[in-house]
Length: 255
Image 1: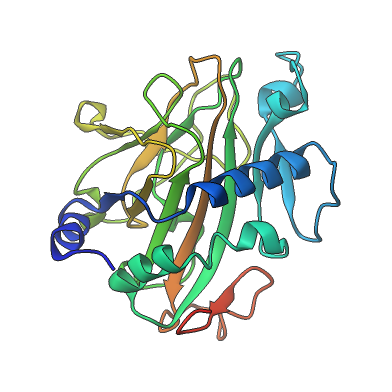
Image 2: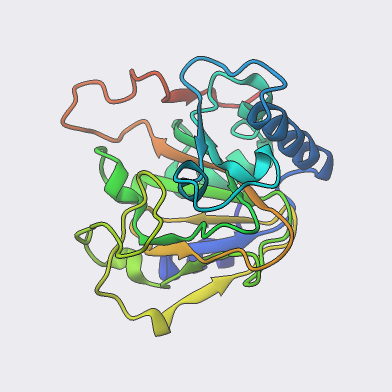
């Protein structure tokens, strides 16, 4: 479970960085499975989305390999190997410290930031993508599968922005923006904090926390696996928000 100091940091700043939640061999397994899916060496489960990078789709760059053309894999709930990330015991313990024991996974992604493409993710709030509320009962987990640095486009956050409202989002005025990437334009970028992570480090963050990521200026891939969790007590305009294809209730205690 999170320590009182870690929980306090999360509540005050909207995020907390935690080490050691995922065993190294599991990190390797998740990355290898992602590569196999992206390269189509294994069958893609129904409802999983393998998203190509917009610069490759539009022919702005010629990818050096299949992996250079992939931006992310989303909706991996139907893939047991990747979904094991959601069920990692130490990760779940940390999540339950924040939102309680009865939780659902509601959004899953493996992010791939290749060298040689723009790949930026504009500053945004994840609550923009969710109908359920309250925001305090939702939390994201983002684990670095390899080191995330300023050079390769680590996450940047605006500490304390989770205490503000859900901002208006629009399309950034960039030449290349991947599908579904929206931006908050009127913010003070000088207040950004770049969260560099070692392999296996996890950042847990609030859905109202303003965050994004920069270009990959290195020669290596920057990869991360991520899940959003929500308390079962959340409500929505939809009567049964959790009866979707992606949302899954996680047994407690986990096995």
